[in-house]
Length: 356
Image 1: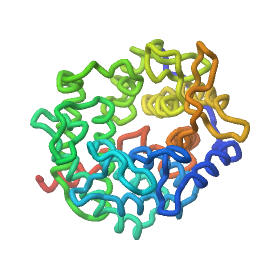
Image 2: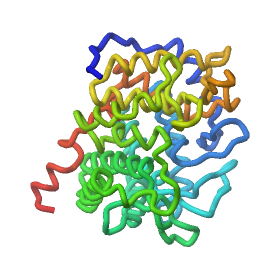
Image 3: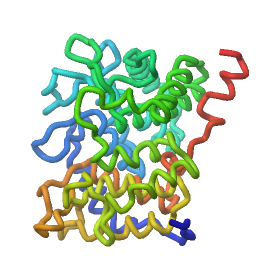
Image 4: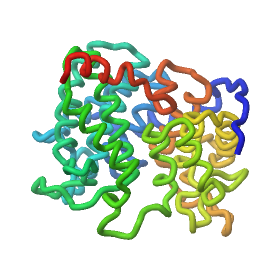
């Protein structure tokens, strides 16, 4: 498919106000942002929602969300898989992409606010989290998807999860450079992970059925910068018809008649990263129909049964909507976080210069 020309896309502030209000109302006093009222919280989706608050200019609320992560962080730098009302609800594992994502969120918030006090306060938590994550990397480059209760790596890796880690390592290197420290191990870990994702597919989905049926396995390596430019566009085009339902959104799984708002928003940003601005606009514009009467987004739509499903409104869906809207409209200084990879500020230049 040919690249489509860009068009002006103003930030839809009034239309997004119900989304922002929903995020604010969902946040608990301790800063925790659960999936929805009565639901659990996990560190990755909590961070996704926090980024939505930053985009909206709700800086105090966003910083409370990051402070919650600091307060819940374990001694080894990780977090449990889920929490309910501030207490761990799943202590069977700690997922590496969940742990790493604090780096993406903190860098995103700093790009918008330039709040150095916030950065200095949060960097130790990022430092510990990334050290934990790279300890789960094998000699082949992939990062174990999780560790068990005792800290032993679980013997397999996920394309989507590893791609998210790859992006978080980029952001962590930005953060390290900004606070004036060198983390050459992080650079090496990112390089090895990128090589595994591009050239060693056998290192992923070794012990279970392939996850390639999921849209995120298709586009997330593009969104995270593993595949860029022509390679990224080729990857998007190769399976476009498998996942995208014109006028509805992006399927979550290729064999299920179900489009989801969050995946569609992430695909929107992946499209922007490879220059497909027109397709990104068209995809995102289709999502406004999946809101309730108050303007809050549902999870998705089952287009055979013609029903909203499930009848849930996750905070991470709202966060993804905010990220996509920002990427399209260039509303904040963080708008290009998921659409460009800035190697010059990923710590690479300084560390190569120093020979580390």
